[in-house]
Length: 292
Image 1 (cartoon, one colour):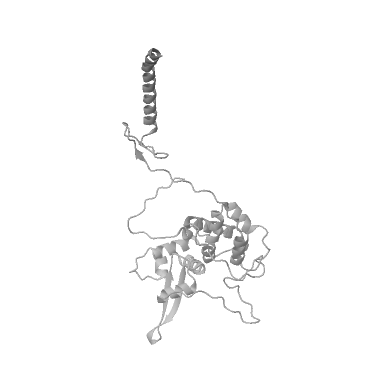
Image 2 (cartoon, rainbow, N blue to C red):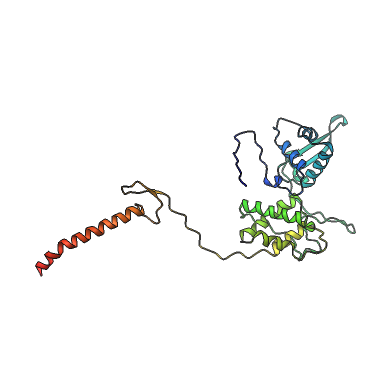
């Protein structure tokens, strides 16, 4: 597959590859989100009007809006203003936002650090973020911190592998926020030399019949089965910069150490010096014989 891409100088929108390749967003949902993100800041247009401009029908719009909301790319609020009037406030983003983060951005404040709520006694509750439910193979008090030294390309690739596993294995269905939070751990596997196959097998081998919290189980396996750090190897020495030959050829070459002339010029100088030494020895031979 050949690809020809020219970066535009203006009128472009920054869109993460996670949105374009999202395993759970339909084509109308991606089109609706990209269209809305491409509008200038001066355009205050509700999502329904954007859908009409994008040629998205009512049924497809309803599904697309639901998908974007479920994945954390769309948030809306009903607000009561003066004289009891109600309005709807909407927000789209090119990254996954939790309800708290979206609300903080709407109000221009810093989002508070999420805390796990205490469940009421006797009431069943959904697993809270950071907790490991019953079948997560080894409970931990707190989730491990995200590795901050993993290069961004490996984090992106790790997120794509997680999205692929989530798409193929229904018991490990992850939403966009889960993938974003776990991508650095997956990238750490790749940084330690694991392949995409190693990562998939570690996440899917021996799964229980029912998984109560796919995100918690995935985090647990990524952490517990993390490959060992490979043994230290000496860093590769950076190559010497190119240099113009100081001989008569004016050729550009890359020296191995501190050479000032290219290989051909050095060979020519060596051959000339050898020939000069031979002629000198022939000239001195009879003289030494006379002295003897």
